Image 1 (cartoon, rainbow, N blue to C red):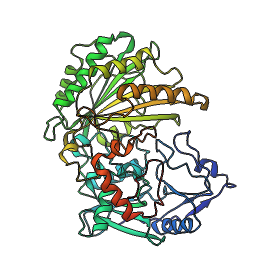
Image 2: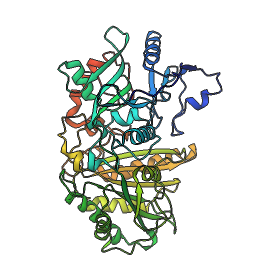
Image 3: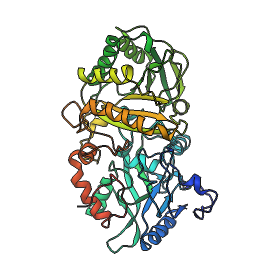
Image 4: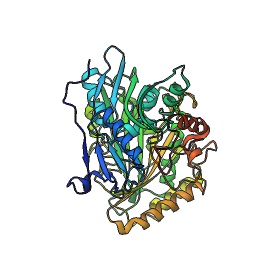
Length: 494
């Protein structure tokens, strides 16, 4: 099927006197507000190349926004520069005459899921927060509730179209393909399969090969415990069993690959606060989800109905009843779109179950010393592994290919005056969990997720990319030799 027929957005430049400017310079996180010379909203690749060329000639810093969800200030930290907005470039279609599926760089995950499903019955194993922009999500690897079954989004990425600045300082458009015999193409395409956004140029189109069929139906199950009914021993048992289950059931050939669980360790914030679990089963086998629940809860107080959302996640259902839903409806149900709150995030991959000292630290900061300045604060533990780990760590730029869980530390608040208290709490928590080096790969831990960037990390190059970093530097030197596309944690040229 050809690209949908639509009038091409002609592009618009939004300058400080424009009434749209205050909106267009803000990220999803209210902490990040830019002050560029202008925001250039682009509708197609040639417009992006034109503004990159102009900005480069004028010596302006260039940053790019796809969805605006970057956890750190990588896009909005652009005083007097050019902020390029790709949001009108949101097409999703099958490339004529090929078996490749094209996603434009400004699409959101909902654009992707909706179009691939309704038109082709396909999907990509991406994230649950469907207002997230595809551009950053895909380049960082991209994972979600179908990833144990189907791997990462980057595992399906066949080619990208990139606007870059060449050795002579000129903007040009290049298309690079996975596995090309040409060294430039091969290395730059490899780097975009998990090397992170904002590093090499501006991706205006992605092409995916053989994306998996979307599930017809999925099973959803949610349950919770009231904090007031959990002892420290109960908490320890829950964390221990959740980790051990994932160690035992996350091999590439595991029969449990269709099951993805999210353990929401919300902090204690009064009598109504809860710890909750959300489970999706991508195959119609309800006995599997019930068996998982029995194993997790066997030695714990009886779980109760989940009464409130957790971090990015809404309540899947205000009951403990197993629900059967069409996949696209379930994806809407689990949407992680939250109000625009100030936030700070940290991450960790785990290859083994939680050590006892980490469980004790989780109890300390979530129960005994919660963040009183936060609207909400939690550690979310996501399932990982299975088909993700079927890919060798050097085949793509995603280096973490033996992990069984992925953690996201989150704290949210509304007022700027509470910034320091929130930042101090999450930093102290994280430091006590992992020490000054962070979750350094040691057999139990396996570094950090580049799509949950954290400027506090000292050795971020190794924590994000491990042994792939030097190859990424080579790709950076090939694609962006003048380091035009840069931020606080961008790939450093050789």
